[in-house]
Length: 497
Image (tube, rainbow, N blue to C red):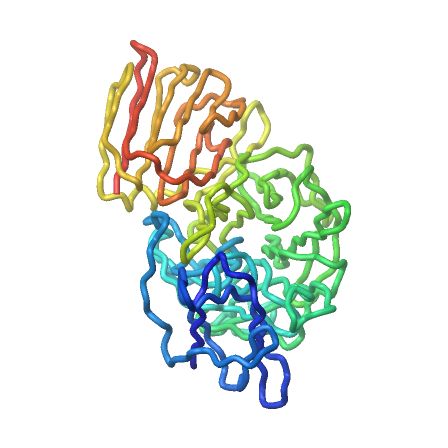
């Protein structure tokens, strides 16, 4: 393996880096913001030995190369998260291909490995033993002649339905969108749904020879989500970027051949479907959600998803494109969002991060099933310091750290309160819960409010987990100020890193 070294600055204009093999075939096409004079980062990109010649905007180019990635530090304009995932270098967006196998949580993600801006979509790959400490293990999927690597999902084929593994050594299957026409190599092609598989527990992947497994349906069909149907088969949910912004539901017995079942819509939502079962009152219900967290709870009846109403789990513009892990131990359903860092100026060697992972479940509120999300307990166990304050009344000021979490529980859930954590305000007036002035109506009393701050990640969960706010903020101060009505009683738990 060899690496080419590409100095980068966000302020530089985009240029096309092309690589050609011995026959002159275009084998590499990357948009780079090349800046050798004053780089914000230097990216190390792996290239195969078959690439013999390079061009930069059509002119001969000889990049600096090496047998190992270049190690060099650059100034950090923002605090990097300590307990949630961000890439070492480059751009991150949608979580992809989430699965658990043999003690490891695998997380893939949309990734630009040669810039801290969107583009050049690959699948990055990180693993964790505890959902807190993540290790990047390289690029799993590279662009090819079908297109760049857009979002998708994963499943461990323990039944060997695909025949790509064995019963003793099940294959890990990645379902992804090949974004035809999104780079120079795939010019003129449409989006298709493709498959890659691993027979070494997710360390390396090979693209399926029969790709695409779902041919073009429209210009931009994308984001396949695969899940077991509970009866020996599988469902695949897909976004269809047509004027109606529809979702499609497919079924399969072998994970290779798919039959369309249904077209459905999720109010104003689009992109990145997630589809999974959850237990409620000893019965199995199905949850279908989109990238903006509109969701429906219903039943699968005669090959169709039936539901009554559509709700929204969180209303933040920053948390987006959430997905849940497949094959999680103990029947857990763990969800994670891309934090888009909206409102944060672009600079530095990396861009965007993941939220804290959350356990999701169904709860009944006024007789109706609602989706609930609470930060996974592994996050709180990772804090080295924990302090209890009980009882509290009036105004309380407590020293704090940039990475911290607060759990606040009041005796009267309808009682107002005000909380200022590292410069971000959280206020409740008896009906609305506001974050930095943005109001969220609460139809469930906020008996317990959890606030989490890590790097630029800000996260709030309240109202039995039915309200989830994911945002991004640069910590302005370091401290906690809690204001309660006099003679009220509240209990606060503070976690510090």
